[in-house]
Length: 395
Image 1 (cartoon, rainbow, N blue to C red):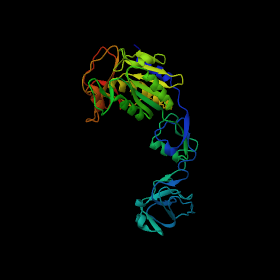
Image 2: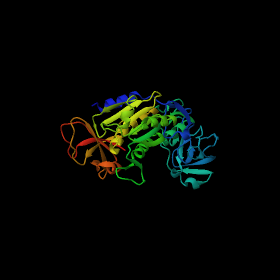
Image 3: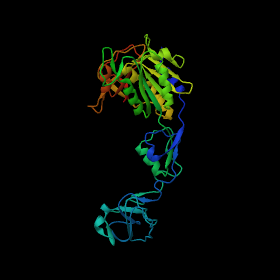
Image 4: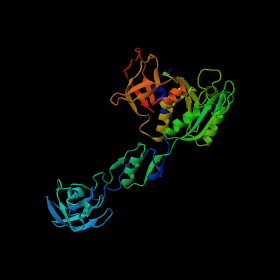
């Protein structure tokens, strides 16, 4: 058997990042930056008011000032201000060059209702620059806004747009084909005869791939005999797939169709993990990545998280290959295995915010559906007890 880390290293060593493409910032959410984004303008681009109120020169309070201008956001006016002058100003408007501070409406006698002739200041500004956002105080032209390898969310895209950048270089979504194997499989919802089961792995694995940012270009199943896996690869490559994920057909039985037909393209190993010991991986001559995962749904899901998800992220150039992890106390004891690492579906009990607990879910697909993540039980001669801390990968 080989270690999990060794199998993952072989997978990542075969990944070649996808070519970047240019996208408008409004169409880039969820994609990974392939080049750093530098600000094209200062943010803000001028000294602007951080409050609705009055721009003033150095004043003490109480004092009554003459209002000489009204400055909404977007104005180009820059009125001259002498001692004793004030300009009504709205948030985001350019602060007059002669002004030294902004007095919020609430620090004046009548606030917004005070009119446009005079204003009585009752609380003086704390000092020069009060309630003024200085030019470039957020970011200066040429400074880094978002680094390469970061997945773009709404907040990051907002920062990029605010910095005057309209297009970004990003990875396209990896294209994935999902192929379930087994002559016993029938589409979910169809009548079943003796020996048949609903096909669920393609739904599970396609959903996991989409959650990882991939695009599904093919979802199908093949029987245990014939050249179905090779035909599926051909169909996947015709659809532009970068990755083909097989489930089932990779173990040591007599009808392991993936293992029996794709030995020239894939290597099949036993990995020191539970569940998911049998694993297959390879590449086609054109570079399509091939994954062979166990057929048990829990084993398939665990295998996807450990090997397929990091590969999809690496194809995009993402610096974060896995999911978020945290340390959580076990809510139940667990027998350790000295020869392999265990991945246990758990539900997180958050009733005590200061001490989350991880409770193993029921076995099988129902327990997988109830899980919030996977607890990682490292190889050990010592069994784990209630309250022991374990690493949990959150779903």
